[in-house]
Length: 281
Ligand code: PAF
Image (cartoon, rainbow, N blue to C red; front, side, top):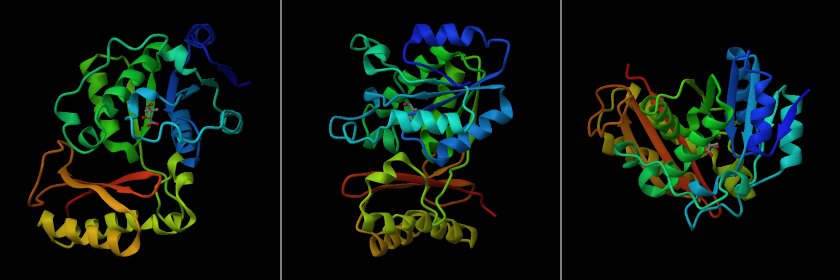
């Protein structure tokens, strides 16, 4: 039977009885969708006990971001977890996680000096601080994160290495809607028209990938073609569009190795991100 807890003490007491098993953690901010269940299903392949956390972490939202409108529905999330064979759900309140204004917030060097590290000041500091706390509370053997948030995934892998967390991070490919839109809890905040337009983000990434695989090496031209597709097919605005080498995230002007194309598009009430790893032929 699925167990739940909203306090750290209760969580530790419940997990004590399962320390003989391999434990996987799926950290989430809730409003679960199939993308999260892909993480849960992958977790089951590695571990005998799957814990999932539901916590909209205020520390990772900037003052002008969507903390207040971020969708939340605990009852629905618990039902989805039950149906999908999650063993334990940790759903703390903000007061439980941050009883006092945090004095210590983890910092980052170069990995936050690009992309959302620049666009969303303080975001990754908030993410790694809460993930660090979750790792200390749950003490999992595995933790799973989606490749949709690839910069987050790379930063968390680095945190685990730098802080010697005794666990393995598993990155899981992005789950997509039938029309290619990356699944995200934020998609519900798109208007009907924007939802129709949003698959253009994945199409634009595919255009970029095809250009590179057909031999285009000039980053400026690739970005221009991607930008044109978004401008012609959506009412959204490109908030970020960058191409970096994989896996080092070095800046490139000319593509000569595998790269990752990162994109962020701002619609009226929601900013969507996506990325594509392009293996150079
Ligand atoms: O990817 C997310 O949903 C969040 O950034 C995470 C990892 C749960 C931390 O709050």
